[in-house]
Length: 208
Length: 207
Image (cartoon, rainbow over all chains, first blue to last red; front, side, top):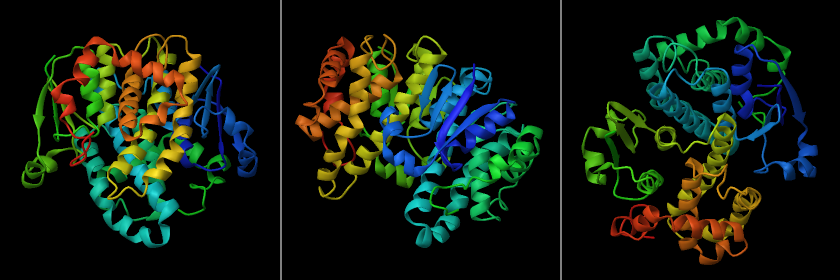
């Protein structure tokens, strides 16, 4: 496996989770940060299978679609459960996180001014599903007893939600503890403290 | 394996599960939940994300259509021959989900005002799949066997031909792929069955 390269815009966006995952797994990767004006020139865009970033390279394998990339990293780094049953449950949780990402993205990019407060108000109705799973599993991870790509995705989306509303996990003790424990993992802590992480805005329109 | 699908009496998001299982000759039971049952029972509250489908495989209960599909793909050997193919299948499938989400949004619109814009944008969405099929000599999206992603594409194409019959005119590889896949004996039988034909795409919207 490797070397890994990400080509993306200068934001966390849909690469946030995979970066945290690779960092935690002790993986090095190259970042090609795409200036939006260059992107609009169209040469790279035309070469991307679906005309979108991120583009991910694992040696000679070129992948698009952030959740496909997360699953690929999950297979590479034994972060896809210990058996078929765990794999299915991990997929289920990651799909649930993706639904939350879509709602968050819609609010951020389309309805921030009017939609932010209702979104925050409605948030417990979505977070409580993850809270219930996390509380039931007792290991500190969503499925099984080690971090899966679903955990990295959930962790990253929760970090972004804490920026949106710093008290949003106050009624979700298991999620709050999950975020604290993940943040304290040495390689994640180092990455979150790095300029590489801190310099990038979460979203492309500057809203958060 | 004892498989049970619980869903509304529509195609919706679960049809692709039915298509895959039928084509593979895998037996499964169906529990049909009407809107009345959904709003008046405690079933919704018992579902992890408050949504259908539910899928049971023995003592494993799964939610989230794509997690269910991936689970079945692993079981039925529809996930490529190695890790590289699995990643490419995931990539194709994720892009197909983007198209499916747009299609479902259109289906739920109250009037036809969005249809023109949708159809204008459709070729851009279909082009990557036309390109992939024309360059992959194996005859499927990835490798030389049908996969998870192929079932998503074939159903999407079937529904789009209903939505706008000429929509594949500019895409010869998609046309021949659709024809070939729909001729697979089990799939052909299912697509011509009353079971499939009578099931609306979404509530109130017949194919």
